[in-house]
Length: 485
Image 1 (tube, rainbow, N blue to C red):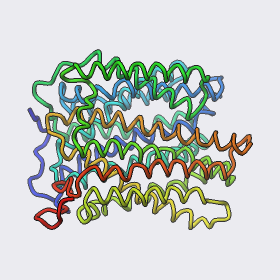
Image 2: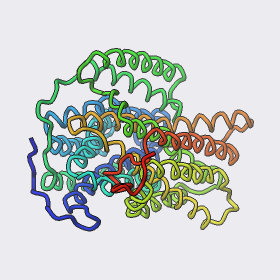
Image 3: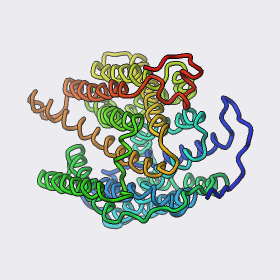
C-alpha cells in the first residue's frame, strides 16, 4: 500500500530528477543535519552545563553516552516500524519525539532530568535518520538516487564540523540551553513539510517484530558502543569499558545464533550476500572509521597544538563542509563517467591521502594552504560518502529495503563511534611512546596517519564488485559503452 500526501510531478526537472524527489531529499537532509549537529554541538557546552548542574565535566559524559545507548536500542527496529505503521507516520513521529526531547533538554535543571531527555531524544534520532533514508529510497527512481543521496552526504559532513564552533558561540554569548532550542523551529518545519509532501509508503504483510533479536542486538550494540565511547572520550573507569565490551561480545554471539534460526531477524545479515551492499558495508565502514576521527582530532590539534580558540578552529574545520557542498552537483557526473567501482577505488585513495596531509599541518603553514587542503579533502570525502550510500541500495529488492536501511544505519553508527575511539587511542599511545603528558603536534600527526591508513583499507574492497555494478543508478557503461570487468 502506498498512500501519497501529494501526487508527485510526472515530468523530470533539472538533471532528470523530479521536483518531488529533490524536495524529499531536502526534507530528509534537514532532519539528518539536525541529528548530526546535535550529536556534536553538546560536547562544547558540557563544562558550562556541569557548572549549572553543580557537577564535574567528567560526570557530564553521561549526557553523551545516554543518547548513544538510546540510538543503539532503537535503530534496529526502525525498518520494522516503517513497514508496520508507514514511513511518513514514523518519520514525522520521529522528528516530533526528537524535537520534544530537545525542548526537555533545554529545560533540564538536574543531570538526571537531562539524561532522561537525552534518552527520549535518542529514540527519535534512531528512527529519524534510517526511516528518512527509507522515505527517499521509496520516492526516488533508480536513476535519481545518486543526485538524491548527494544531498544526504553534505549534512552528514557539515553537522560534525559546524557543531563545535556553534556550541562555543552559543555558550559564550547566550546560554547552553540554546544548543537544544535551535532544534525546535527546524523540527516544527520538518513536521509540516513531511505531512504535506512525503508519501506514507509501507510494505504489506509486515512480519512480527523480532523481540528476542531486538533485545540481544540492543545489548550487543549498547555494550560495544559504550566500550568504544569509554575508550574514545574517557570519563568512565576502565572496568566499565571492559565489562561493556564483554557483555557486547557475548550478546553479539547470541544474536548471531538467534538470527540464523529466525525467519525475519531485526538485523538481517544475509543482506551481506548482495555484492554491492557487502562492498558498501565493509569498505564504507573502514572509510567511516578513518573519517569519523576527524571531528575529534582536528579541533584538538588546532586548539592544543596551534593555540587557537574553539571558535577559530571551528571556522577552519568548516572548510571540510564547504568541500562537501562543492562536490554535491559533481557527484552525478563523476559516477556516470567512471562508475561506482573505479570511483570508490581511486577516490578512496585520494580521500585517504588528503586525510594524511593533515598530519603535516603546522602553525607555520599559511592559513590559505590549510583551508585549501581541508576544502579538497571535504570534496573527495563527500563523493565517497555519496557513492557508498547510493550503491548500498542499488540491488536491494523493494521488500527488503526496510531491513537494509536498519542494518546499514546501525553499522554506520558503530563505525563512526569507532572512529573517535581509534583516533583517541592512537593519540594516547603516541603520547605514552613519546613521554608527553599532554598531546603535542607530533602525537596528532601520528593519529592522522593511522586513521588515514584505516580509511585507505576501504578503497580496495570496491574490487569485490564488477566495474559495471550500479550502472542503472549512475548511467555508466550502459548500452555497451564499457566492458564488464
